[in-house]
Image (tube, rainbow, N blue to C red; front, top):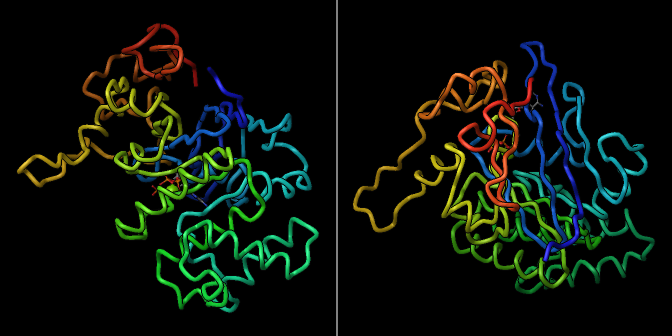
Length: 331
Ligand SMILES: Nc1ncnc2c1ncn2[C@@H]1O[C@H](COP(=O)(O)OP(=O)(O)OP(=O)(O)O)[C@@H](O)[C@H]1O
Ligand SMILES: [Mg+2]
């Protein structure tokens, strides 16, 4: 059964107009997010994951950034163009975000409890006492030991893993329908990482919440994702259920990413990597952005962006190896 769509990103383009030129960071991103699912955005550094996430709530630096095309449909509104007032209601309310390097966004001069309570009071008319008790419950939900004590701590008194969980607690303070978590586990050790993944999975089920989980690490996708969208050169190049992506990857870039997953049984401890470099965002290649690194490259790949083709009705790919060789999109 197909569940309800809660967010739809259509042909989104966010470009940065810098003195050195135009950075087409997000260059035609398409995906849908279903109720209660975790969708992973996965891809190498610089491919546009963070800018995609920031674009949903229009939180990128502007200037130099601007949404030059596309839509972000949420509850009938286009968040790419709706009035700022509407967007402010949605930010931190319906849609919450845990930022990459979240820990540095905690304010060092206030206790963590004050910061969470403040966040609650921005969106809801509740007393400080009520807000603090909400903060306490959230810290418990995040499995933070001695939540009362933790609320009275300043950020520097907390371990990295605790800070990260406090940030997630803060993002959940207004019971968002959608949580966007940008690399929430990169700065923590493996044990804490497993705990955070476990907590997020539980939250998703308990609250019937949708999660957009951003990572460059495919092995994490396996643990948390229901579906995955593979991002390259500011576009989504393949979308499918996580098992499909891992077992039957279609796009040569996805195949490359999977080949780079460390093989625990192997004696060879060298990590393979995809040949070539990620594209210079100031000079995106013509046609398919992956063509300079692709071992299957054909003439058409150099001139025209491939359209999205269906492998199955729930597995799509943008690559001329699949679908109509004439069906490209002129860009
Ligand atoms: N404020 C900005 N001004 C100019 N260019 C920017 C700005 N923010 C991001 N970019 C560029 O946009 C591109 C996409 O960046 P983004 O941060 O979305 O990548 P990412 O996929 O999140 O990478 P990472 O895995 O390293 O976090 C990069 O080339 C980046 O340099
Ligand atoms: Mg990023």
